[in-house]
Amino acid sequence: MELRLTMRGLTLAALLFSQASAHEHHGDKIAEGHAISEDPIDSILWIHILVQAVAWGILFPTGMVLGIIRSRLHVPVQTTGSLLALVGYFLGHKHKGRQFAPNAHAKFVPTLMFTLLAQVVMGVYLKLHLERGIHGKIRKVVVKTHGWVGKLMPVVSWVQFVLGGIASMGFCRNDHMGQCLAHFIMGSAFIAYGILLTILLLVGQLWLRKTGRSQEFFDSMVIAAWGCVNTFTEHRWGGPWVANDLQHTTMGIIWWCAGLVGIWLSRTRDGRPKRNLIPGIVILLTGWGMSAHPQHLPISSMVHTIFGYTLMAAGLARIVEISFVLRDKDTLSADGNDPNSFQYLTPFLLYASGFLFMGATEEQMQILADAHVTHVSYVFILYSIAFLLFLFVNLLIHLYAVHVWGENAKGDAEAPRANGNGYARADRRVRDAEEFELEGLVSDDDDDAVPIEDKERRPLTSRS
Image (cartoon, rainbow, N blue to C red):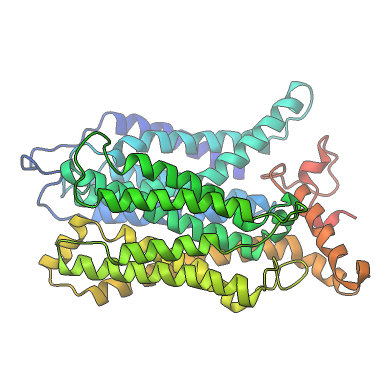
């Protein structure tokens, strides 16, 4: 049944692609020098936005996690998401009302949809369970490719969502391009950092222990690399220093300087991983710098100030967490699955910082000023969005953690612990996590099947 639905989806996709390729967006109502017409967004386009948000923003990430844990719901959820994405694709080419000039959102759609089709094709191939002969080798490659592309889809979807928002309002054109890119890229980076910290906090401590590195080692490496990029891209070298070039460039310099220090301090003299406060200090200083960033509009100054204060709070919370909550330890519990409530503060504040920065571009601030919207109302809206994303990420991590560790927890409660400190359970979970990575992403055979690659499909809880 699932295969028939998938094949019908492929047929529908081919039909929609053929129709869409013959369709051209009109721009006869777009005034010269503008990126959009004065028409409102019509109901068809609103449905397109809603359908694509559900498919790419909710179903596909959920299906990705279901695939990682080898749930039987993986294929139905991904199939539903694929069909919705195709319907949304069709609606995006049939709307009326507001017209749009050529933009990155529209140009990126074919790549995104063909990536989705590739995922569907790989999923169908894996469901056929062709494992004999050359298929045994092909299957290994397809399994890993399907898994990695599936994990990349949320990132690609985020980029398309951002591009869609920009296109809908006609933002980021001409002189606004530079600051627009800075806000959306940097804001997305803060949100991504918050998501990674959430993952590491809830399910990533065993992986960190396996690497033999502290969390600050990886944080400091990224900070140093990002600082190098900012140092040489925020100012057009050889030209005059304009606007906030100097502040952006010096911020890049302090990032790579501090990042190098953080890398050095992330290990003890005997090579053991060591916590340090450098990433927290960098976040705090960045927030302080952004809170004093000069702006042209009063509402822009206030939003940037709140953004800076939020980022400063994230850095301060990280310092307090390491110094006083954890006292330089990696976790409070042996396996790291019971974090202190204070530890959630830093990731969430990074989510909020990211949305505040993404929502503070010149064009957005001008629209709010013209509409007489106060900065308080606007900040509350952005914080609400941050709360929702934080909740969704926690739900996905919970779905993964309950399946991976839930069954083992009962057995481990009475199991003997090495040296009485729980590390036997932690080591066992490390092995389980290693075996549970990508290989069996879509495989859900019955227990009485005899597959060639048993490791790819046997559920984790069945292993001894």
